[in-house]
Structures are given as C-alpha cells and as structure tokens.
Image 1 (tube, rainbow, N blue to C red):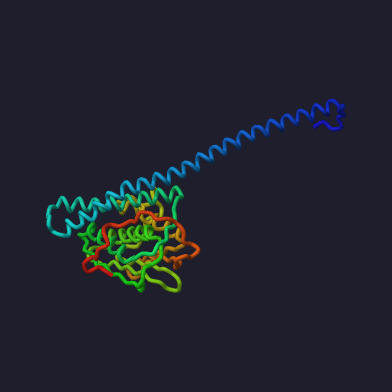
Image 2 (spheres, rainbow, N blue to C red):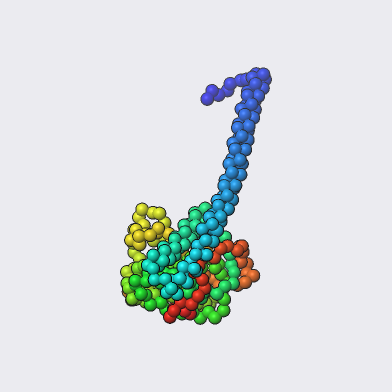
Length: 292
C-alpha cells in the first residue's frame, strides 16, 4: 500500500462512484441469489407436501385391498373348510407382505420427516391379539408359548398406528430369534404416570452391529435376520417421536426390551394429529389360548 498519496477532488469522487457501482452490482447479485433460494424453497415445500400425499395414497392403495383380503383368508384357513396348502401359503405371504409394506411406508415417513401424532382412545388388547395371531401363523413351526400380563383395565390413549407397528416389530424379532417351544412374554402396564411396554424372549443377546440402523452395511443384525432390517430402526424412531425411551437388557439368558412413554391423557397438551389408517394383521378376534 502506498501511503500519503494525495488525491484531487475529482479523483476522490471517481473513486467513490466506482465503489458505489461495485456495491450496487453486489446487491443486485445478492437479490438474484435470494430470489433463486426463495424459488428453491417453494419447490422444496411443494415437494415435501407431494411426498406426504404420495405416501398417504400408497398406504391407502395397498392397505385397503389387503385389509379386505386378510380377514377372508383367515376365515378360510381357520374354518378348515379348505385344506389346500396353497391357500395356507397365500395367507402367510399376504401377512408378510402387509407387514413389510407397513414397515417400508413407516421408514419413508421417518426419512422424509413427515410423521404425525395421532392420539386416540383404543383397546390395545385387540391389537395384541391381532399381531400375535398373524405372527403365530407365520412362525407356526416354532410353536411359541405367549404370555401376556397387564394392569390396564380400560382403553389407553395413545397413537394406535405406531403402537401397532412397534409391537409388531418387537414381537416379530422375538418370534424370529427365540428357539422353538420357548416363551415370549409381553407385559404392558402403567406405573407412576409412565406407560411401559416390556417384551422378553429366550435367545442370544442382540450384539450384532447396530440393530437400530436400517440399510447400513455394518448392520449385521439385519443380515442375520434375513429381512429388510427396518424393524428396530422404526421402533427407535417411533419411540423417540412419542417422547419415549428404549432399553435392551440380557438377564438370565433372556432378552428384555423395555419401552417407557409418558402417560398421555385425553385433551393433554401433546395430543395432536388426524385419523390415519390402522395397522392390523387381521380382524379383532380372540386368539386360542393366547387372549388377554
């Protein structure tokens, strides 16, 4: 830098004019960038809205026919009117398809951050019976003994859809990894304003990679299960979304998964949302020797 340079009045004016033109040009460039960002933001908002609508449409398009077919197949299978093994196979595959589709849609909603809280009052016993009925049929060769305990006499106020999928995925893991003819225990109770779900099963402890991560190469748990590897990642995301906590313990050669949620009360501050399709394996019917 050259110090002590004397400039004439005209040179000073030209210098200021040049700086002002440069600043004006920069402001115009920034305005263009801001307008482009605003346009991009509007597109992103519209894209997110379209994703939500698309997932809702997919859910209805798949679930509606499945909900119609599953109860019919169940009646045919349980009535023993048809002993055709093909019918039994179709029923099993439909149950699996229904379960996996709901998991895929759930992960899509989680990844796109479009989850909604949908608290309603419902009878959780019927959901448990439905889930157990479907999984018992899928894992019929394992002949598990299911025990269910609860201190809840009335309906609960919770997110029915997410409760259904949480229970379905936890029990699916228990059925899959428990040795044949062993006990799978489900305990659901209220304690000190906490809604607690505990599922216990025999088997090796979950120590394979990170079971909460879906579509990860290091998720050897998913590869061991030979499934999509979405279940526990959905359970974790739903639990955290509903302000809950999840823990795993291995006690006396048994796996224990514990979910702890706040006890939601009707008209409470956190009760928001709108009606969504319910997730059920089949109709609300009692399960032989496994009802609550």
